[in-house]
View 1 (tube, rainbow, N blue to C red):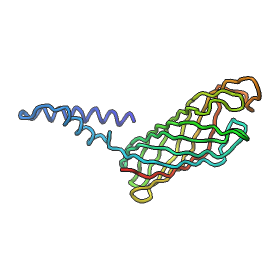
View 2 (view 1 turned 45 degrees about the horizontal axis):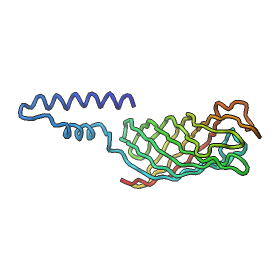
View 3 (view 1 turned 30 degrees about the vertical axis):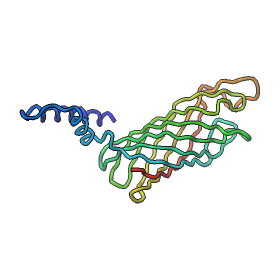
View 4 (view 1 turned 90 degrees about the vertical axis):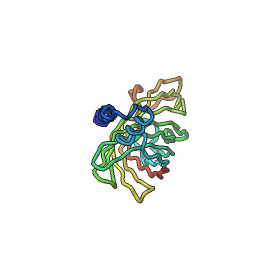
Length: 200
């Protein structure tokens, strides 16, 4: 990502110098932004919607179950270059025998595409619990991480396999306790499979 910003800065200088060298041209900010987007890839990413499935998730909660969800992503890939991907996913996780943990997960990543058919990615995520209490424990969001890769299946579909760890912070209330010693970081980790349909 740092390399992408540096290249964008260099490209900005190059565009400015081209305009300065041409005595007949006047600087146009709209044209500059369009040119910068074309050269850097910013704003030219693909939007997609996807289904997520994480079977047999290992959790600090009372039950290890399957997490599933629906999300939207925006990404930019270019063969033999770095890119980015981020998504917003609504998910549900079996957290106790009779309780589901629903949450929103935001997962920005840096990616690298060795060719035109696949890519690798690594990044951080942050979870916002929509279910505020599980087993008399009040939950708040926390950082996690993910790493994995994906492949394109035709022009409109891609499949990803990602190892992901998501986190929550907990505060015990009166009543039963979660089976963990550290409530500053409650985690749920496992393999995540995501199938996405590209919209543009």
